[in-house]
Structure formats: C-alpha cells, structure tokens
Image (cartoon, rainbow, N blue to C red; front, side, top):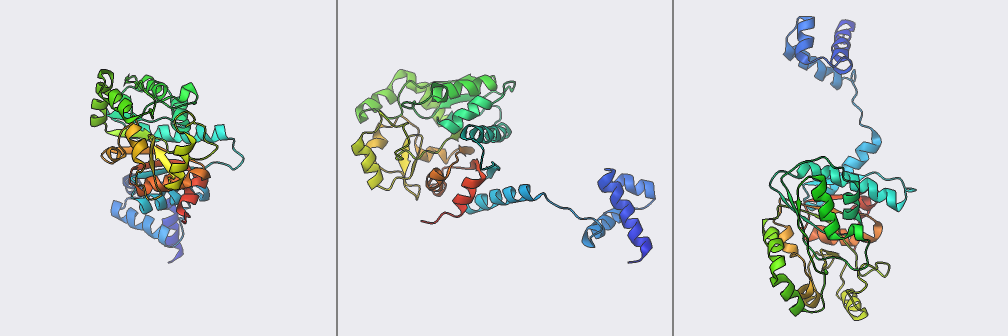
Length: 316
C-alpha cells in the first residue's frame, strides 16, 4: 500500500469514527461511491489503521454472561461487577438496580407478573423508581415469610412494584408453609385465593429469589421448619428452594410432606412463562443456583461477578 492510499484510508476513517459522518455523507463529500467507503473502512480495520478495543472490565463481564447463558440455555444473564470491599447492603442495591433495568426491558402491557419474596427481590422493590405506567398485574406466587423484614414481605413487594408501574397489585393472606396438608387445601380452596390462583394460570413473567434454607445462618425459616424437618431436608441433599419448594442439585423437587404444605405455585409452572427472572448472589448460594439452572426453572439470571465465576467453576 502506497502513501496516497494510506492517507485516503485515514481521512475516511477519521470522518467516520471521529466526526461521526455516515457513509453516505462521506461519499458525497469525497465524490466517491458509498460502496467504496465501505470497502475502505473494512480495509482500514484489516490492516490496523483503525483498531477497535473493548474495555477489559466490560469484556470480562460480558464473556461471563455469554458463558453462563450458553451453558444453561438462558435467554439472558446480567453479571454485575462488584468490588470485593463493597458492603452487603451496597452489593444488593447494585444487583437490585441491574435487575430492575432488566425487568423494565422485558415487561409489556398485559403481563401478569408473579413475585416471590427475599432480600434480593425486596431490594428491587426498594430501588425501583416510580413514573412508569404499564397495564400489568402483580401477584404473589408464594405465601409470606416467617421472621423477615416487613418491607421484604411478598405483599409489600407486590405493592411497591404496582405503585412504580402505576398498575394493580394482588395480595396473599397466608404463610408460605402451613402446619398440615388439610390447612393448605382449605386455604387454596378459599374464596380469597381464587383470584390469586386464576392469575397464576395467566402469569407470563416471574421475578424470584433463590434460597439456601437449610443453612444454619438462615433464620427466615424459623417457625416454619422444626429440627426434624431441617434434618430430613439435609438427608435428602436439598440445596435450595424457590417459592418454598425444595430441590436437589439436579433441580428435582423433593419432600412430599413439605410440598403438600406449601402455599405456593408449582415449580413446573415457572417453565411455562415467557420469562422467569431469578435474582440471586453469594457464594453460599452457588449450589442453590446451579440446582435451579439444572431444573430449567429460569430464563434470566441476575447475579454478581464472584457468584457467576463460582457457578461456572462448580464441581460436585
């Protein structure tokens, strides 16, 4: 390539990349064909006159998202970069804001959105900004938690989402797990649950957390599970729960007794949604997330970088 040709490539490249002119505008200004401009820009990239560089931190995060999505057949993954020294509260807020952004891009008029409870989904409700307006119905898909902050109760979450989107919220008047199958059947057959159950059938999107309930540090289940039940879950190799339904590392729901006492949507129903968005992070939940992914209960995942890497490196 001679000096004159190199000069022409640099002139065209500067017009396109630095002056933001379109290829048509460049062609008119230089008196050449647009196809000639296209070929010149391609050659400028091929021989190194133009170098396009992706910022390293962004590239790493996007690569993690791509690997997770491809491995587990997910529609989309959001991996949120979080500095190691970031506090737990700030970490949840960053993840919550990312999840809100994803949800906002997915929801459309007419959606019925099922909501679970937990710290991550609750943080979404805390950080979501008001001002949207959509024809959406928000409904709990699991009963309320035990000793948890009131602002992270499933009904509070449903109210917060509905208020932000200027839409309608429905509520559920029951604990997530009740004392007996008979009590659960009475609740599910009651008049006030009929609207909720009807919406479960119409549900198009779910926003859920993923729990590791048998951890000794997890006090959410205090009052729901006795020592005997917790030990039984451990003996059955339970790794996590979604909507108070417990599953193994292979995503198989187990424990008939607790299953029959749960006031919650069936896990299989989540697979029928247009989108099921899970928001979950922390190394202690890695097995729980892997089990949920293997169970094919999710279409979208929002997590942090450390958790994403641990999921990819998971070994049984």
